[in-house]
Amino acid sequence: MSEAILLRGDPSVRVADAYERIRRTRMQDLVFLNPNLRVEAVGFRAWEGEWLGALVTPWSLNLLLLPGEGEWTSLAAGSERFVTFPAGSFRFIAGHEAGLGESHSCSLFSPVLEFADHEAARLTAEAALAALFAADALADEPRAATVSKRDFLRGRVSGSSHGDRG
Image (tube, rainbow, N blue to C red; front, side, top):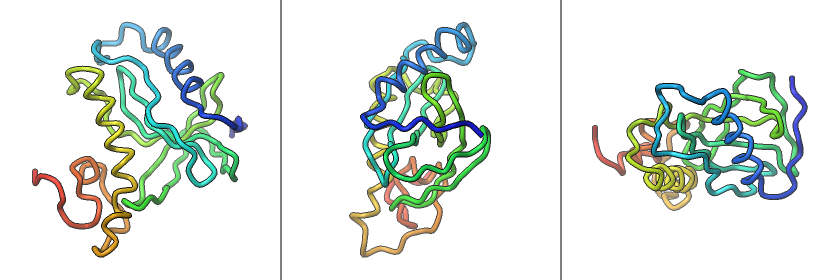
């Protein structure tokens, strides 16, 4: 297991810097990169003692959890944990990056070739973060214990369809 790096302030710059280094080194010249996207940490906020945000890169769009000031369960790289939000339970995979430390990510899109531009990817990241908590507004409706990524991204977060069928 890797040692977690406690992040006391907004980790957006640190996340973006770490993944920009990855883009320039390990990911450089790979064919599945979307040339219209860049690295951006989106919407990071403190949540239940951890940092929650989204990460847009030319190869993926992920939800990302990082250690905050609360209790953090360190996991071996590749291990998984399920995290429950108002919208349901989502699987996060542990990873470790130099300069960032341990993080847990939930893949929303990989690869990200369907995005025409960076703005569309960022708006999707913002919408995904908002949708995690959208079920709070649907308190009168029953909620599913778990939600598939497909249903989540289509807006079906409460156990009934609020988005398009397809």
